[in-house]
Image (cartoon, rainbow, N blue to C red; front, side):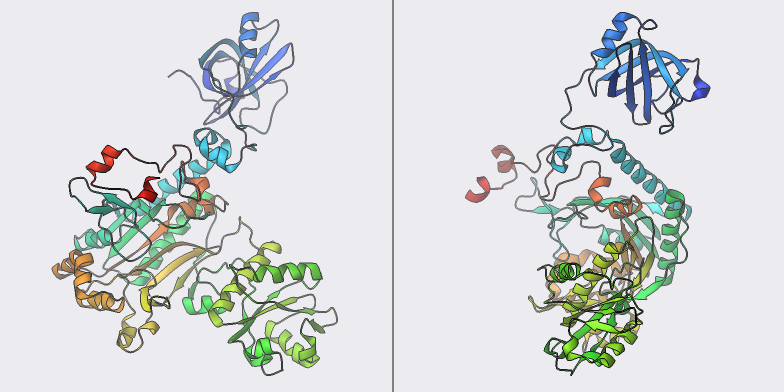
Length: 586
């Protein structure tokens, strides 16, 4: 090794030792007769010192000529610092340098490589290899490493076996858009990159591997946002000879293990909430339960009073923002503008303040008597100082809008603390969801999810009412994992494909290999997949998964560092039997 110690290793006990350090020049402070350099590596920072009278003049001059991010090697004696720095672990010592070697000079970096940098997102993504030198970014990847290590430790302790599945697979029509890969050896045919290893893990169950997991790359060609990337990582798991209860207990233990080992946080038993209750009380199948503010439905109280907005609405529903009656008209107008944004879609907002004397003043006072408004207060269990916020309209649209308003109020009132964790299971999802545009059903999870046995009788008469043996783990309003008990009977799987609009021929063409496997002794099985990047961002208190991926893509799906995707040579296109149209060629 070129070094005897790392830059985060030396302590006062090392005083008097002759050591060799290597690393990058973080900063240089020249006070004339004294000069200090902060030397940085992955492990920390050590101060190097040079002093006129104690340091050879040529060595002092050599140090003065160093620039930021130079890679250097420094030899010398560890001494106690006169002015200690209690903010870093090595702050009690410094290295009095006797020999200095520049291993590689460096250009001036395009942004400050400091915890607080002056580089914007685009610039830092272009020079991601420099951004990764910054302590906060490095700590994110160290957290990711610990999460990965503890995942393997926990699953290995329960006899799970890690099996790799193929990356070049067959394109299937369900789910998000596939990334496709042309085959040179099979003209006109394409592989797809896996959106998940779903069919392969089910085949592993047929193969007798009763406990499988994989930390696996997955690919989806979809529009991006802060919590999405075209390539992402899943913790993919499957078990045989189990019930839904076994899955929930096993992976509740898993998440509690991660919180304990990585965060030092003890998580109690995860509560369970049905999909129906989640939508009714929170307007979301991934409710943030760090705070209350549950929905209160008002149809029976507010209709037929002459207020047309409420009278014509399918649903009138609201929340109680505790202690917010002091909101100004400007603040209430801001909330109204918030819910009227196109992505939320409400037509307006009705509010009512509970006064100190218990009386209630509303923005629709002329339609409702004081007694009517007291009935509102009773429904919300309101107290003096509370603010009641009410929306009206179609059921689904109004619940969705009120969910957004609830989260906004939770943010404004400081109720969404990133250091507080509230996990739960959401269960009993619908098996199917209706697509108005295509006039057909889609699988709410995927086509291999089994229906509740007690609901199977509705498969011909009321398929939209069938519940699935499906479950999601939600933490702080984020779905971190989801799965289901799978269909393992060919006949039921064929019925499912029929419900989803597949002809028998289409089902065989796409999934014949799986249905054939079911005829060779498929065990009852089920599983779950966790979004590993999302778990990391949640544990790290960040909003974006990009912060926990070494080399992420931007919101256009581009890697601006290596400039990908990019055109390929005409010779390569010819080999792949691909001809670009005029638009693509430009």
